[in-house]
Length: 430
Image (cartoon, rainbow, N blue to C red; front, side, top):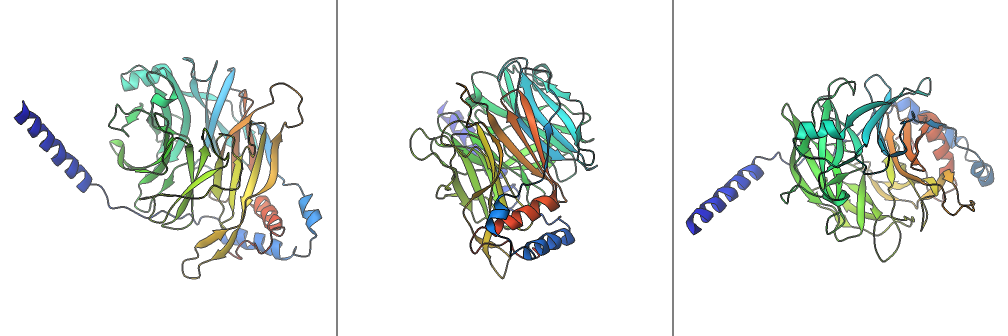
């Protein structure tokens, strides 16, 4: 038996070495540069012509954007919306809905948003627990957190969380794929991310692309510890395969990382804090080698009451966050911005950012005297190729709310807001 065990161990080590040796070499982040140059230049010209504005008039100026309810789910509880731009210019949103979070009747639903006419289509059911069970050949008790991803070959992928036994800490990730932008979907497949029963990997934040066509996916772990992880995925005719995984944080205090890229090698990760003790602020880590390694950074001077955050970087390197800027509760939702303070001449790399500042209050129930205040939570930000921004968030666990920011209005507003920040200006023509 000892000889047999030794042979099995040696075979396993050889197999593991071959698998590691066959992995693609690590790649650089794929930088997006799809916003038309004339749009950027016009926004920056608007900035320069308004340098004589008084701060008070800028402060009182409202940001113009469209807001509406996403299609009614028809169910009592909805949560965790996400979205992606489609090839025809429309947006497809996803969320999960049921009698309550984690109930057996929860389904993943979807609806289309037409940005030209500013209307939502009727909702449709993408997948339910029974169809997932049939595809995976295993019992499924809970589903949630749908996340759409565009693969390098154009197919639309939808990642989501599944639980067979226990709570969300026992989750694994499954994925379905569509070749017609979500009209029809193939069967669900499990993504193997852990050798320990493939447990406790959850998804929430947007993915991004590497230059070699592989996908970077921030995920998080909740069983025993609470920390962020970084998956590198490869899509082929056989589906999605995990080719690498790296730890982004450690301990028991970080969840649901979002990643904001600086350049081909550098990026910052921001986390929902889940500390039992210590400051209630957004936590951060950083990479300078395209995600191969991550170093814990200082907390942002931004409150976080153990709630999800959303963020993205605009074409002029201005960063946005949407979150509950509270120590306790989720009854206030704001948009914050941080502007680049200087650039590297060689690589146009942002070397530092200014402090985060609230630029728009989206929801605020602070003055309510009700015992239970309204909840505005789980924001999700996405950006089109033209720079338009779509925000989705949960409204009191009953509806999904939309806020749509056209690129020109958003850029112009943020440029004027930047005038209120000393020695901080968006880079001209970038």
